[in-house]
Amino acid sequence: MDWPGISAASQGYWSCHVCDLVSRPEPTDPQPRCPRCGTRLHQRRPDSLQRCWALLIASYIMYIPANLMIMMETGTLISYREDTIMSGVIHLWQSGNPGIAVIVFVASILVPLFKLLVLTLLLLSVRRGSTWKIRTRIQLYRIVELVGRWSMLDIFVLTILAALVQIQSMATVRAGTASIAFGMVVVLTMFAAMVFDPRLMWDQLRKRTGHE
Amino acid sequence: MRAQERPLIACPQCDLLLREIELPPNGAACCCCCGATLYRNRPDSINRSLALALAAAMFYCVANAFPIIGINLQGSGNAVTLLQAVHDLWNQGMHLVAGLTFITSILVPALELGLLLYLLLPLYLGKVPVGVSPVMRLLQAIKPWGMVEVFMLGILVSLVKLVQDFRIIPGVALWSFGILTLLLAALASSFNPRDIWLQLDKDRDGVID
Ligand SMILES: [Zn+2]
Ligand SMILES: [Zn+2]
Image (cartoon, rainbow over all chains, first blue to last red; front, side, top):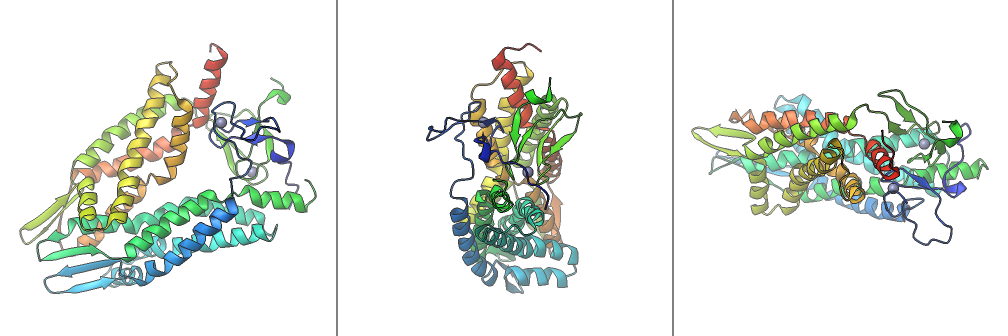
């Protein structure tokens, strides 16, 4: 790892997360505000690690019912089936839609799991003061921020199908309990990624390499 | 202007302290420590964003006013608009799912387009709108929750699932959602918050361009 440079914080500069202005508030000011846009300034996102851990643990707990309980009930005159997320994917695959099955598998199972594991890795590495593969870790963080929203796919499919397929007794679709847990996982992991402050990783690096 | 006088910036992802550099049109400045994109130079960003936001607002209205898809099974059928779908699901007791869809596909996109128009229209006319700071703060806070493009993929997946059992009648809103998705993507890449702040600084300092 080459020289990571000097952080704004070490020079007494605070940057605004809304307008990007860098300013140097009075050291005595208990609640500095951005001189340009008036936003409350924080050198690092407040209580980043504690909040991220809390949201992450809640997501892990919700991840279990989201995958074990029923996501969708489909009824027709001749058949009735209950699907979890995974059995829905398998059903899609077997009914001749492997492409869509893969999309749903990635969005509903792989992406939430990936987010949980990466955020756990990031939190543990910051706590241990690790400088290990920092460029890979920041890339992982960016991927988590980028792909998180796509997990909402199944929620939207469920909304459309459950509202549309209501044809008397001939065909009905209902959302199952897993949809509540799954929605919580998506929202909680998005919040977890938002409260995590990637600058904490570089603070460790600068401390370790003796630059600050 | 000498390099010493250019304003300071801090990388939002690693807090590296840097000085701004001049960018060519459509260029982007990246952090030399962590590789994050720091700022971009989008020529004519205010005019282009305004045009895209106006077009997107139009298609947003069409996409919400008309049914997305209709289905038909042996003579009986059903068709729903997005708002009806949310309403039906709410009545089925699925409040969280209905709420999430309402916020991410109806409320936040509308709010985003409304706030952007509120900012861009006066700037286009050479005036400065009241309350730029709270509006920009709100825009930044709601941005991750606008998910029209994900909803569009949701429509496509639903179509594939439905086509096996039903006759599908594509609605006007289906096409409108497709176009809206493209317009919002173009808008996101053309809108440059930095230009708004620079414009504001210029007006505050009373410099005439
Ligand atoms: Zn500011
Ligand atoms: Zn950086």
